[in-house]
Amino acid sequence: MAWTKTIRGIVVKKTTWLLLIGLLLVGIVVPGCSSGTSSLQVATDATWPPFEYVNTDTKEIEGFDIDVMKAIAEKADLDIEFVNVGWDPLLAGMAQGTYDLAISSITITEDRKKDMLFSDPYFAAGQMVVVAADNTSIKSHMDLSGVVGAQIGTTGAFEIEKIDAAELKTYDDIGLAVQDLMNGQIVAVVCDNPVALDYVKVNAGKVKTVGEAFTDEFYGIAAAKGNEAVVAKINTAIAALEAEGKFAEISKKWLE
Ligand code: ARG
Picture 1 (cartoon, rainbow, N blue to C red):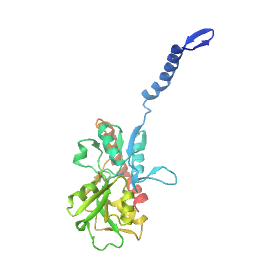
Picture 2 (tube, rainbow, N blue to C red):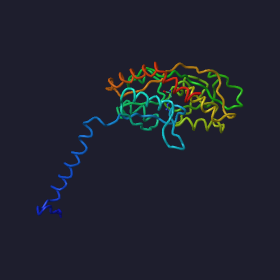
Picture 3 (cartoon, protein in one colour):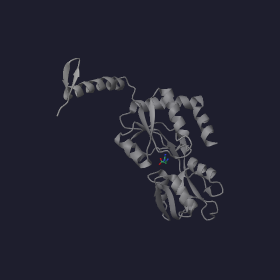
Picture 4 (tube, rainbow, N blue to C red):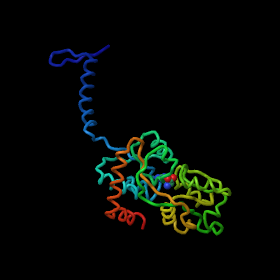
C-alpha cells in the first residue's frame, strides 16, 4: 500500500514525496561537483618504507613520496586524496583509469608507458640485494642462486627472472619477503635501494645489503591516460620544487 503524507492539508503520495526528496538531493550534490571541488585520487601502495608506508602509531600514510606529492599538489594547486591500494591493483587501476594519479616509487618503463602517462623523473634508484647478515656466499646480484624474493610485478622481480640460477618468489608485500629472509625461508630479497637500506637499518645485525645498486631507474608520478594537462602542471611543479631545494629537504628528512 502506497502511504501518503499531508503537508498543509495537501495529500502527497509516496512517489511524489520521494521525487521531492530526490530533487532536493540533486540540488545539494550537483553544484558541489560542478564547482570543481572533487579531488584527484592518488593511488599508492603504502608497503614500501621509507617512500610510502602506514605509520603504525598514527595510521596515516607517510613517507618521501607522500611529502613529494603534497608539495606538488600545493605548488600546482591540485586538490588530492590518497588511496592506499596493493601494487598489482595500482598498476591495473592506472591502466583502466580507476585513479587519476599514482605515486608509489614507480619506475618509468617503456612497458608501463603503454598503459599510463608519466611525469618527469623525480628520483633515481636502483635494485639492491639484501641477504642474511651471516651470508658469505652472495657478494652481489651475480652470485644470486636459490629462492629470491621480490614484490610481485616490480622491477626487482623482473631482474630476478633474468638470473638463471635464481628462482623468483613473489610477495604482495616486501615486508613479508624480508621476514622470510630472516626466517631462512629464502636466500635473498631484491628491491629498490632506499627500501633495502631502510630494512637493513630497522633489522640491524639480521640482514645486510651486498654490492651496489645494479640497475638505473627513475621514479615518475603516473597519470591515467587523458590527464595530459595535469601531468604538465606536475612537471612545472617538479621543476620549481627542484630549483627551490624542496627535494633536497625531503631527501634529508627521509633518507638520512
Ligand atoms: N620501483 C619498483 C617498480 O616500479 C618498485 C615499486 C614498488 N612500490 C611500492 N610502493 N610497492 O617496479
